[in-house]
Every structure is written in C-alpha cells, then in structure tokens.
Image (tube, rainbow, N blue to C red):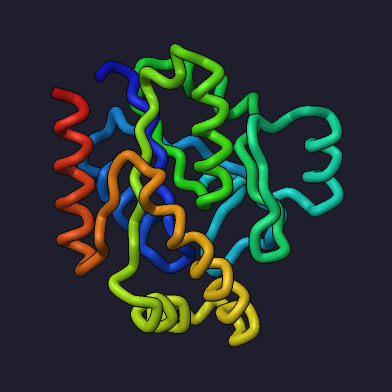
Length: 192
C-alpha cells in the first residue's frame, strides 16, 4: 500500500511510542505526525518533536477556530491532530504514523469513513497490555506521573481496552522486542 497512514493506539503505558519509534528508526520513510496536547512536557520531551505543546487556552481557541481534524479530552488534558500538521505531511511521499489515544482513533475511523481516499490508506493497530497489573507497573516505572495520575490513567485504560476489537490489528503486548516484531510484520504485510 502506497502512502500508508498507520494509527497506533492503546492505553497509556502500553508501549505504543516505543514500537513506533523503532519502526521509524528502521524505516526512514515512515514519519510521525506530531499531534498536539495541552499537557506539559514530561522529562526530555520537546515541542514540535514529541508533541505540539499548547496551553489549555490556546488548544480551546484552536478547537473554536476548527484547527483540528479530531481532538479529545483524556486524563483532563486535550489531545488532537492539527489539520495543518497532517495536511503538510500527507503532501509528501512518506508513510505516516499517528500515535494517538483510543478516542482519537475512533474519530479517525469516522473521518476516514467520510473520505474514501483516506479510508483506502488508513489502518489501525491496538497495543493491548498483558494485564492491567502489568500496565500499572509500566506506568509507575516511567516515574513521570503521580499516583493520582496513574489511577486516572488506569481508569481510562479499562474503558479503552473494551475498544480493541474495533481496530484492524491487535498486538497482545509481551516484550518490547516481541511487540516491535509484531508491528513490523503488520507494516511489511501492508506494504507488500
């Protein structure tokens, strides 16, 4: 499939960023669509590289102005895909990755349903944690969220896990290497 748009989704802590970064590293023609968020950067995250970091007020202004293809409020923070960012990326010949939450993936399915060209190019992958205990361990192991934030993310994860059957592919998470191997296999099958 030429000019693939691959959505990678799953609960916070599922490993979606880790496998996506490995795919982009191995396949230089795969580019990430940088999405926007109203949350502050964590650790070494950089604006324009990891996310476009916006203040809640600026994000809400963008919503009012119709600047986003989709957006959602998750964990009391806004997340969304800017029309400008995606339109700039689609104009190139690269394959695109959208690393987004489950609500965002649901919105993209609806958008693609109304756009035959987009629907033809878009596929979705859900990364399901081995267990909720493992997911909690991974979130705590990041050392970037408070216990309250971890509990908020776990509550959201329970709802997100119910949506896994609505994705084109599901990777049942094991190790980082096994998860990446499964994603790479999906990607290569789609490109053949």
